[in-house]
Image 1 (tube, one colour):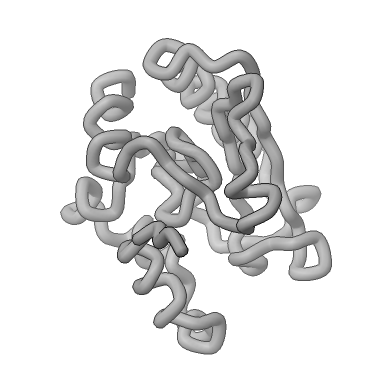
Image 2 (cartoon, rainbow, N blue to C red; image 1 turned 180 degrees about the vertical axis):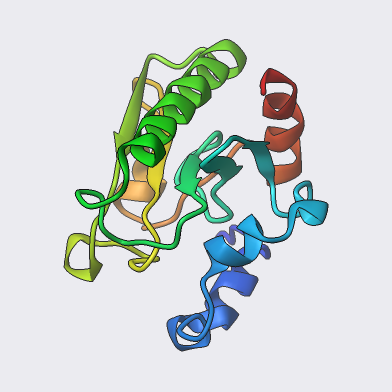
Length: 161
């Protein structure tokens, strides 16, 4: 039997959903600019920030997060949602320049029933995609194989912001 080691996932598994109930990870990061590099924050704008997903589906998986702690897209102020979209466009340009993907997935999961892992704080996922980037490991083994670690992804993307 082959083994695929991904020790960075241990932090996610150990954190558990219950451990996150009392605090919002996005608010903690938003309020801690001194640790942007450790938190993989690529850019801070007026109403939002851009960061790497700590548990990416694919290399370059970014999230765009408003500073405002809200789960409701439709009632969020226009200046915040405008900045959310502007930063998403900026992130797409950076990903295109660095990774030259064939396409992108962009989305929001609003609420637990919609699959939101952090349901109480609105955020957009942006993922670069390539033809054939899903292989048997994801399909059959339910395991993702990423070609680079987060510090490498961060060092490639940070200069684009």
